[in-house]
Amino acid sequence: MTFLFENCQSVSVKGLTINWDIPFTFLGEVVSVNSKEGWREIKLFKDGLSWKLEKGQIKFPGVDRFNYTCLGSTLPFEKDTKRVVHGAIGIDSELDKN
Image (cartoon, rainbow, N blue to C red; front, side, top):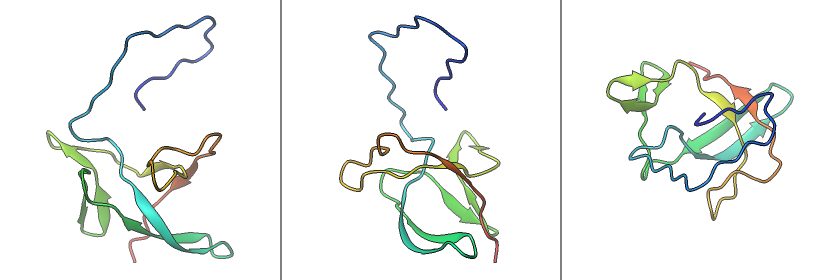
């Protein structure tokens, strides 16, 4: 999360540019879903992203030996633009180590 404005009024941000060398996210395409069992299979994208699979865990972003401890929130995105869908609701994700 780059910014969090909480319980604020009249917040303005102008002239701000954020340009990460390595994004602190990873993207993938959902290839199958089992709503009954509560899982989804995702084919992760590699181009321009920094992550690796190590001992059954996704490690990212791997910048200066820093990695997040969990996958965090999963958001749907537009495949062509790779932008989060407007009004998307995130769901927490955990990696199944099997």
